Length: 119
Image (tube, rainbow, N blue to C red):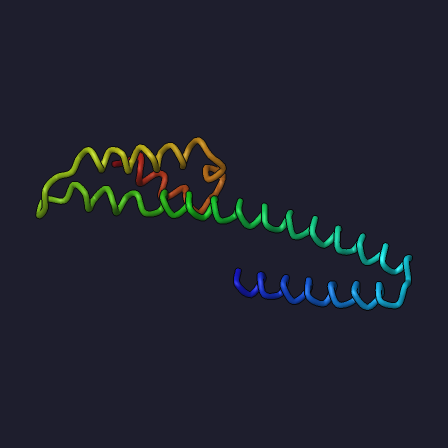
């Protein structure tokens, strides 16, 4: 992700240099084309940002579902105090995510979802 941000900054830096050079020469057609390219670039960056946010949200949900069985076992394990309330909330959140969101279509988590329902 950091590499992508660095690449985007470098791309914007080169576009800004070309735009400034064209404006300095007085080429209005070139300036218009550069402005359109910059606008297209901003639109592409905005779409890429939205896509990255969606991916991060999906990964966060997948991590919650994946970690739920072990967290549940840890919360109700005999050596320590039994924290059944926290265990129920953990399983409830994981079930809600696993069966009512876009994570339900991820085939890699079907085994984990089965483990959650077994508990």
